[in-house]
Image (cartoon, rainbow, N blue to C red; front, side):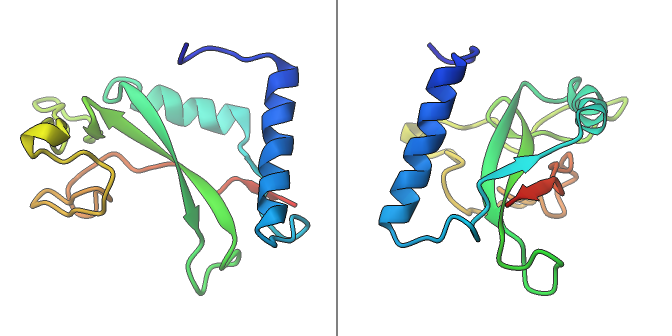
Length: 140
């Protein structure tokens, strides 16, 4: 059943299994990001801000780019979505997402690729989309 709390023991087992899997791939987990922590007051402020224009949050994996203080480190990006597309910034006249046609069988953007449409595409770049959330504390 999606969208529900899970028992602490289940969460710990899932994290342990992930760590073991990464080690089988030869990843040194003392140098790999295991978690990203966000300050609850700041996160809640952002969630409250986007709650009127989003109906889901997608947690995306990413790497910091060259030149960033954490270059090469893995992070998570919290991306607000509405009706299956990146959420648009709130305005008095329009609260529409970038692309509401999300049925891959119908040829719409299934959001599983890096397509860019005229409104900014998946990354929302230049399309007026609501900014994703990042810059948490990396562990280790």
